[in-house]
Image (cartoon, rainbow, N blue to C red):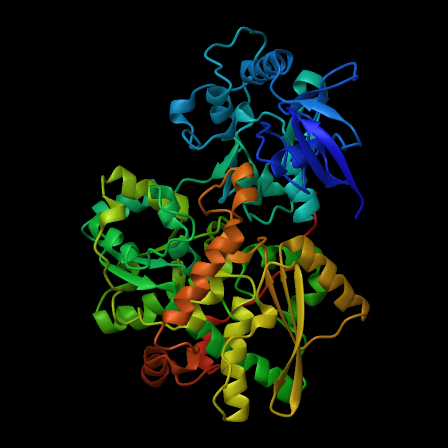
Length: 580
């Protein structure tokens, strides 16, 4: 690729011709502040925090959208630049709810950090401020326009990455807002509750619906038996909320913290992930043998399920009928566990700790409330669980590791990789291969379905059959893939879809990483490494070899896809109107 040479703050820099000044500066560790910028997603120069002085230019230029050119001379730290950035930031702050102490992003806010870095200690500009009513109707997401800085990062992620496109700029000038059209609540449009808007918002304008008080109330009620389950992706991200390095595995600290909070029983969602593989793998083989609807498409991501219901209703019969691991765990806790422990299931409060805001929506779907009480009563995000631990004054970092409770706590490496994109596919293939061939896999790792490439394809030999598989993460990539399936351009036997880019590891309920920090270390990569390390270290790495899974079938379910298994562990889907 052609290169150009420019000078930035007296340093000669040689970079590819298609670089911006911002990328060129970062290539030599010169820090230019940004706020609205998301690399490759939202590059619009709207906030003007990245302005620089360019020799012979008549005005300051936005570095994030300014192409480099041969011989360009740039100054990023002149008096003129510093003053302009400070004024721009003060103008943003003048129309922003400054009650930082009560904001969920206090201490982890990009606007707050910029104010500190640029030494903004007062706001010299005052003017009209409009008080808006926060949108509280969604079970998953709260939208607070009073904290919005109109950076449009959420809009770009929703439109360009997820292709859901349910929020955007309305009105003009000072009255511009980012919201659904026609004064609708976000719960009234085709929002899939994925929360990618939350984790990409630089401030506290978007947050998850806080359900921690429901859990505190349950823990304080002596008539309730409160059970927790923790998802695979939580164990490699929760530590970040306590200052631990990204990708630190805190598996043993999760049940330890839960017990100190007062939970009666702590189970691992990995157990029900193994259960999912037995049910879904059997379903897949049944469709293969009996001419069933193919490709089979995974159903464990609730954001993806809702996206499919809105956008691809013609593929609803292709979805696996399996409930997600969260819902399967709730179902077996309120039946199998309740029976074994001699507890009235109506007195059990099932609490999930999930990396996902869409799980809150999933838990309240009518099909998951059999017999008058739900499979799962409350869903907490990773961030909410961290908040409870902090409220209780627990020294999380120094907790001694503990194990999960036995009955539904034993799991395999196949289950833990559910947290990463490609993990469900790989876990299923480990089991399907051995069930079909009767042989032990020589190489247990299916590298072809790993990684953060948006769409991955592979052909896997399983006995006499060449199984064509595909993996997509992020609903924008799923849309591209499924449009080819619908048109007949592509044919597969099995497809895995995760709603969030990177899978559950990068879910909408995970610890929030600043935009600039993501460039230095991609959480999708760092957390995935920890997930695969945990898989590698597990004594059992195939779902069908889990002894507790074998036991629940022997004692209770009969066999995979039995009538009882279908009654408790399977579901159906609903075509939904598409409302933008």
